[in-house]
Length: 447
Image 1 (cartoon, helix red, strand yellow):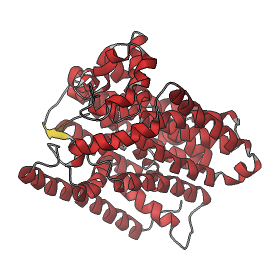
Image 2 (image 1 turned 135 degrees about the vertical axis):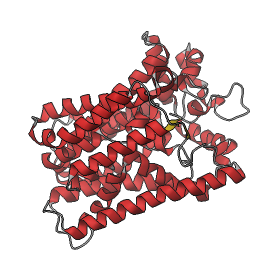
Image 3 (image 1 turned 180 degrees about the horizontal axis):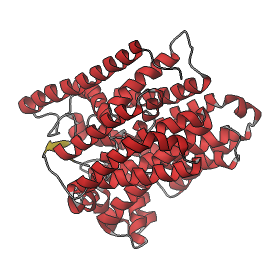
Image 4 (image 1 turned 60 degrees about the vertical axis):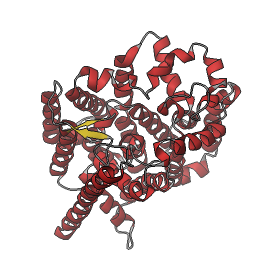
């Protein structure tokens, strides 16, 4: 990418200013609605959080990790061998996520997250007979049914809960192990995105993305929410598909399909990852035409998890239909669509950072005529645009009113690569780190 003209930098700052203004308006309008009507059901709109300035045992580590990535991340991303970069990125993402989680302390920040009233670990005992629990799962989704599931269990297909049941069966019991699982697996999402970027757009842009994927404000919610784990599964599905369509082993296509099927059974809304998968197929369309078994293996792999759950007695479509009913029985039926349809986007600014707002402006410029960008940049822009479309569909659906700072983590990971189009990475990384540190130290988030 050529050196950015001064007018482009000013355009970046205008995009950042617009994003910051969106967040400010969402805070002020949300505060007014909540104070006067009490219909938002969040204490610090637009985030599910409340004001609680604090320090914690993770504070020194978080500051050190942030400073280290800002200072050394960009040059190391260029110089490290590729496999070394992947290992370093995962290690740094782990350190960043753990340190942010521990700002709230072990119990409040990690062990107690997934044992809260509506969380997955509260129903592990009801899965003592897993086949029977799956057959009976849809009978407990709607409020008013016998022993209705807590909100998060009712709101997701059973693979989400079953993950924590299997951890318990393996002897990894309690909130500490569950939190460690989500952080450890969730932190691999940045590696998956890097693998996909290298396969689809080339190594240069992948390397430029690496520090931004590591130092994402989204890490505040990856540690600890189950949606961080979901984000990693979805990301690896896309990464394996990218490997398959760019000439690697065809077996990757079956693996991509298998993980996409699992993704759909972790969260109903993540079926929208088909949009990102379609973008990968478009980018690699020449290879797909040359090797049609890619599509056959992808579809075969994608059928495995649905077949297993269907044979076990769980009907995904029935589960989703009942979820819609449950959603409108609860606060989802009260929260005003007219506020959340744009305030959700303010949440997205907070989890992806102001650098991503500038990167998305660059993404639009890459795709706008006349196209003067490189082929690699156009491919990156297509991949990011697919994530933007997924977010917009989820937003307009009305099934994501609030709490999108965690619900949209899987999509957020694919917005962050837009930052590869930015110049002066250290300045942008500093902005990303400061936002994450302020969020984690000024607010006590609900996830």
